[in-house]
Image (tube, helix red, strand yellow):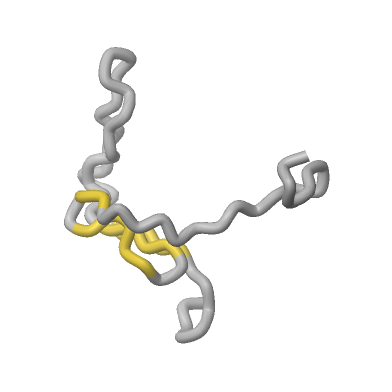
Length: 69
């Protein structure tokens, strides 16, 4: 649910143009057709460009504690 005060990750994409341009020679490419990505309400991809924001949190599974062990 998208609601004020909630945490949400939202990806806005065009299913007709979304594609992965990464290659073995140039693997670190952003997906095409994904102009906006929001993590916890903060824009991370805006107009296809990374904003520098890193609002996410690491979520550890049951086999690992918060110290990384």
